[in-house]
Amino acid sequence: MKIRFTKMQASGNDFIVLEDGPHLRRKEVLSKKLCDRKFGIGADGVLFLSRKSAIADFRLTIYNSDGSRPKMCGNGSRCAALFFQNKLKIGNRKLKIETDAGVIGAKVTGKKIRIKMQDASSFRNIKLKVLGKNMTVHYVVLGVPHAVLFVSKTEDVDVFSLGRTIRYHREFRPAGANVDFVRVLNRGEISIRTYERGVEGETLSCGTGAVSSVFIANKLNYTGKSVTVIPASGEKLKIDIEKDGNYLEGFAEKVFTGVIDL
Image 1: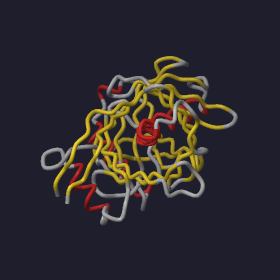
Image 2: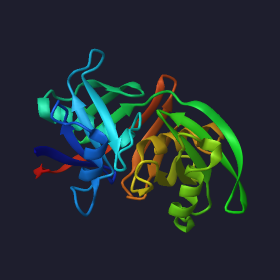
Image 3: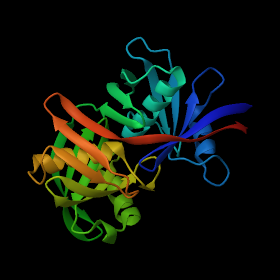
Image 4: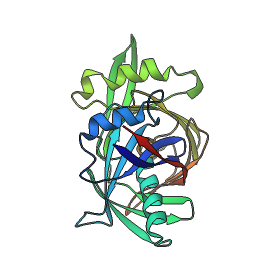
């Protein structure tokens, strides 16, 4: 079977974009094959786009590189909005995207995409003992669950070991949590590194992680409501915590297109 695909990235978070249809079956197995960086195309996840939505412009279904299905992906949603806008040549207008976590809004302006995320919920501070150390983790669900830790230097963090241990901690079972390590640079800027569920390792950027981290930093009065986030990729994101919702803004782009024969 030959499959046409588009490779896209947003702040270093890379995805394979497919137009969904009945020929794309067993999506969890397909996604694992396509995302394999040695034997497939290589990506953090696969975005399946369908125009069959009764409540939005299109339907977005996301699969991680391990075949799991998250409810939401911030950077993936930005890539999907850009793909949809370019595909239909609809100009710079607002879009509605149906996800497993609900409908989100998107505005595409050139290669800059701004999306309105779901409302944050389940916020709580949790005391944990991890790898023999006591620490405070700030938990929030913003479409998907995140555990946020504030650190003095993000570059000194063993993201894989510590992130994986927290991700699978009994406190967050059964779903687990994405883990964000955050350094507050000033009231308008933070740096962040993220261990992502489903990828089971560090990604260059995580959109929901960026918004979750700013939401918590602002709630703890570490930052203001408009914050620049510097992820591992170095490609900055802009987060706004506003009365009507939480916003994620940044650039995305098409990397290449192709056909794979499976």
